[in-house]
Length: 290
Length: 313
Image (cartoon, rainbow over all chains, first blue to last red; front, side, top):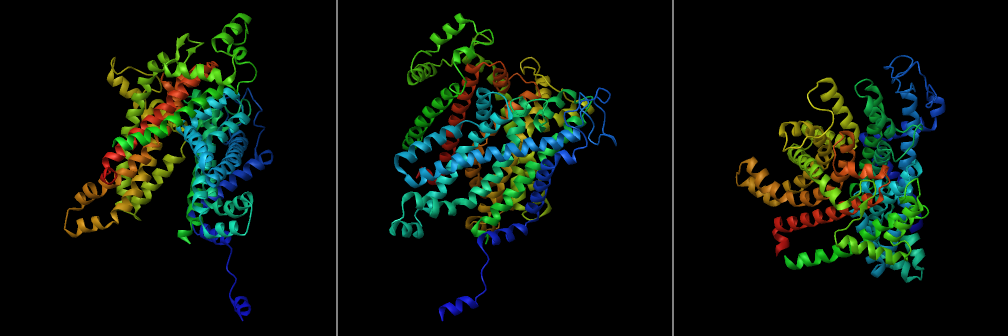
């Protein structure tokens, strides 16, 4: 009878699907998702979409105002600003994704260890995390980039390392609340190893807040990469990056303001979109909103 | 109070110790022999030998760390190889400029962020609320160096109202100082105002729905008294704590803002040091920043303790 009754009941949607349905009802978050997808497509299809080679200089087109030939104008050595903005999306998105992946790949296992093992390992990890969090994010990234040497790769490593303590702290806090749940006790009672309990039973249940934090961290990483490139510690010339474009543009504000407008608008739109998406995901993944 | 301070200080000491390890460890990231790197492009063998002896590079790593830590505890953060000056002297020279910038930025952030948060909470769901939230999102998503460039374009290039860059000491010309600082301070305060607005809105919404606020309204008190005296006072505790965390944003933001507006402060000192490969200055500035951040958070905790009667028992 029980089996029959269960078969008659409509199958409930998975938690992921329910979260997506909730997310899709939030217009601001969906607008953010659309813009993020737009920039990702732009970055992937840059060679087909960009009207010019982003490195091609033209001495006859130096600092030309926006026109039909150059929609966003040209820069101080005659390169097309639109093409550089399109290719610049690659550096920003790559920096955002790679640095957050670095932060996740260190932060989550360390946070899991601190939260699950507790005792001296928790105390040690927590104090180290406090020390890293005591150093402001960008200052730490600048210092790391300074010692590692200026390049996009090193900037991504520096941003990733600087963002790691947030993930350690978040994972640890989540693990502390999940590890006292009955199903974890049950997993322990049936003789599962600590590694299996941590990876199979605890980790999947701490993922939702990590997804939200990762989305918001990508926004922070995009700004951090632009900041490091603006300071000359990220993407090196002549390769295009929104931050390094702004660094050059600040010297030509009087004569060629268009050089500064579009890279900044692009950073703003991408960061705003990740922030909107992160806020929407937080609401959609929070069980209290279910 | 004393037991609270003792407990708080007990967690700060190991944190500071790890901060010193982290910053000392940065030097180990330099590829090859640090003395060779620090000696510059000439790599004069005499300079390399001098640096090896001076930096105790012939000693094991833990011993080198202890030598370095000993110097730090005596207030010796090393010497700038480029400027031939003690790092502490350089920090003391540049710090007042950044402190002035940060102080004006905090005032701007408080003047914008807290009233906007209050209005947004009181008028929840109205056009005012949406406008305040939109402004907060704008503040959180705008890179401050870009906002700085755009403000230079508008107020310096187009309107000619304010100087585009530079710094004038307030003791020489206070009007000139204010004119030079207002744009960078606004740029720096903008992001913090957005965060303060969000914290204030959320804290006020929580407090406004509590029983004692309902009682105050039921007594027939003026709405302004209810909001400003009863609600805001209690909402201030989370605002203080969460606002203190933004001091890091302030210090990071100062680096970029000073670069855009060519202000000779603390932020410009670290950027110039990075490009001059003046690693002792980089380490010194990072250590000073982290220590200041920890100290300011301690002060915020004490303020939280003092304004929250429940903690005082």
